Image 1 (tube, rainbow, N blue to C red):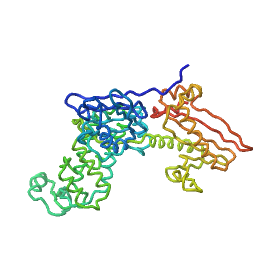
Image 2: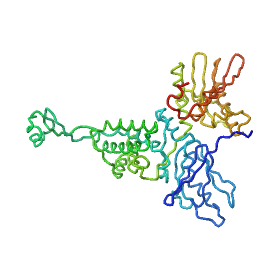
Image 3: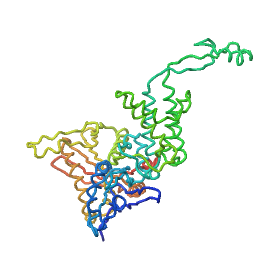
Image 4: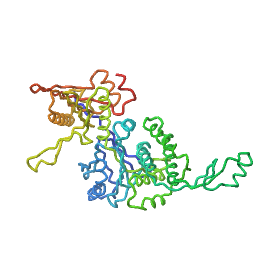
Length: 474
């Protein structure tokens, strides 16, 4: 039987005659070939010629942000350039090899689908979310990325902006039983006295409140983002959660009218002080994005923001959330590496090996005389390892699993306990996990004994973006 390999992901290049080309790929998927004619003038030989080096120079930094590597591969008549996606989803612009201007875009989609990523981000409270890049807009990407992917971080920026906006005086009109400020006598005569409500006094007074203009800007932006999410995303759990967040924030803005921000005013406020709080600066930037309708409110533009999301970090936070749920049910003391709670410094005898300075298990659970070490791995599907014999796997997949096993066993050696379990957790598609779970094959275990000490190695699969209640059915 032929070796079973991970399914190769397709890459697509999309554009219309009036649109700059957009290349698409899938994380950890098949490399995509870049068309020389999109980035450089036609050469006599028909290949890249000297423009290959300049293409790499102009685009290397932004490709690195997206964890995309480049290679020169044999081709006729000259070597061709291919881009190989890594473990990040996102979008970046691609620049001309001749002028350095943006002439195309690249989108790397998650191999578990946008819905899977949205479910995981929603379940983890957006603990890991897209990060915006300091780069030009990405041609065509606004139509390839669901609005909620970028709407989530924008809503959180607007929420922080509301919490940090400077207070200011606003003129308020209010009907009162006792005078405050000054009484609007014409209104009193026409509205109160003429109706026999002599005790109702229409008053106008200055009131110390949050800046009403800025709050009006935020209300306008929230309404735009919510409207976009309602129109295209109500079928997805993460979009519904963001709609609820936007609605909740709008409830606190009933005292102001929605005002469309002017980009010049936003720039003026942002540049008014170098000491402007980071939350305010990021919130003003988010307002500008919504005004420009970069896939965040209106959907009229084709170009979108440059961003990236490390899927490995997202998977680690998802696994941490699952383990926390288990510890809450079963007991134990949990520590996590991202908080610096599981760090083991390495003391090297020479300087030649100091590139690795410490070991950091992702999660450690202590319970009585037992230790459970958990390491989340966003790599090849665990189903390949479970359903097919180890010897039938492709060598590169087998070697990757072997390196993971060696790493987690090194972690196990750090703990002086009689009973140690070292678990590697890999992502699965929901349907694959359910099928394996039904047959009891979502776990694989092996025991290692050294004297009275036992180390249990465990390979475990979890669904990436599980259906609500799926785990509770088993």
